[in-house]
Amino acid sequence: MMSFGHPGEVSRPFLIIFTDLDGTLLDHDTYSYRSALPALRKIRKEGLPLILCTSKTITETESYRRRLRNTDPFIVENGAAVFIPAGYFPSPIPRSSRRGGYEVISLGFSPEEARKALNNIGRKSGLSLTGLSEMSAARVRRLTGLSRVQASRARDRQYTEPFIVEGEKPGDRRILQEEARAEGVTLTRGGRFWHLSGGGDKGEAAMILTGLYRGMVGKVLTVGLGDSLNDFPLLDAVDIPRLVRKPGGDYQRGVPGKRVRITEGIGPAGWNQAVLEAIRETD
Image (tube, rainbow, N blue to C red; front, top):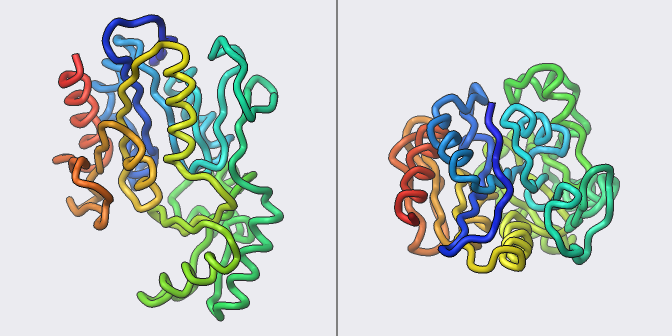
């Protein structure tokens, strides 16, 4: 099992790695990170923070943190909240509140607000929208390939509402985005679902954590890895952005900026290559 060290004072820029999970560190279909083990071991050896930055819920993310023995902060529900282990940073954390063993910075809104906004968008657009919280556990399992326990964790949303458009057509994207703007909410597209939130994204959440690390260790250098549209804010916010190829070798089009490199490998294999390259290039 892996354990990621706590940062200390360094003379060169301190490397921080922000990563999406599904389709990036985790295989899109099997959710395995076996192909990423060499880079995970290198991260542990170097004592680098590995920040899980995901659309997953708190309970889902905590499950992977336990498997990885990860003790660093993490970002859930597409940037809607930042969870920082209590005492991780020596100074008080602005905008945070205590929740169990975490200091939490909330950027999103409540599940009730999310469902209300989704219902409004569906009614005004005429589209048939089904939120994850409305789905049976069996349907969630069919759509995701998750186990019964994992599907239950995926439905435990606290800040956002993932959803699907029943019978989705190419023109539905424009309609959704127009109605979301009118409703004053944010829509992002993940690997399997649309995600509706009331504020914050992966990029904003990553920048908050980057500022906290900078206040503790001084100069930092950030790496960001993702595979889908909802990862673009993260890739735009970091110093070293890497877009991971999807199954079949294709990749998400429309990525912002010219700094983004596309991995050669797919999923966790591409993630592994990109992380090892970034560590070598910054040594």
